[in-house]
Image (tube, rainbow, N blue to C red; front, top):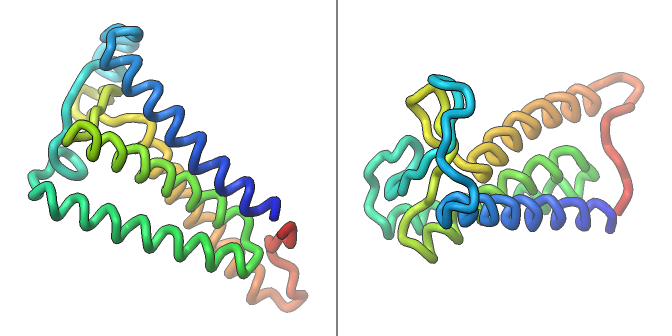
Length: 161
């Protein structure tokens, strides 16, 4: 049960934090500024496409997002059944980021990005959660698989259902 609670908290917290910061910047509660010129800035950008503002028809973006969320929740269910806490938590952050951007897209018709990196990429908290969640999932999955194949049978499995 604790595993499910942690995953739900990861999803909900990511969505809430992402949306709060998006609206804080959009409403000028946080002003646009160069924090480290040429490296990091706060700006405003309406992203109507997918990754990197890649132009994709809106209905296709919605369908792909719903499909991705379905795959994520299936992966979370599988990780739960296998008592793979860290995988479950990592997928929770990916799902939270995907949901944050999905809500933004449904409400506004686009995703609001506000963190400018190296004067080339504009992202948001949801994008960071997705990226870090994917990295954490890959690392934890590697260690779970390594643990599952170890002779002594000791892995990272945490039975805290």
